[in-house]
Image (cartoon, rainbow, N blue to C red):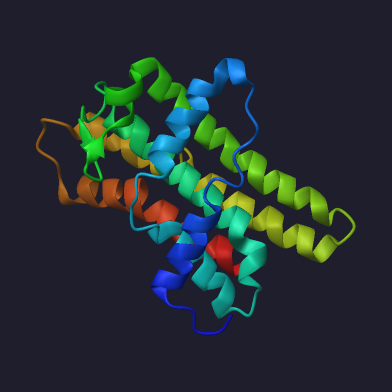
Length: 198
């Protein structure tokens, strides 16, 4: 897949975006519907596209990176669901449609975000299990998961979110503003490129 365009990458992500959600018991189907609602609400798909493009750039097979690209979008979408909650930014619209908590309630929105985050790691680990007999490919996948974990966690996106909340309604220094942007936004973008390269 040489020289893939942005729209081709985006279509590939959109085509597979629900493929890696686990099967959910009918008794808890509401959380699946809430997860699906936010995943399919549109968006640029920048992070998974960067992951696929980085994979292609270093000569990798884009098809092998799809579970990781979709996982990245699951993580990004979970962060948006939680960011929109009344306790955070209290937004009622996201991508032109009502936010998850407006449609499903706060408790279900929290659980949908939790479900997307854990589904991301389930998808990546499920793929990793296919390579237990191939140490080189397994090692690459472990490194990719590590970069994604680090970028999404308390040394990345979560750290930026914490700083953003604590800086709310206060005079914010340039250093703090840079810290917020580098972690809340850039950490997942950087992780996308690094994971795709691995």
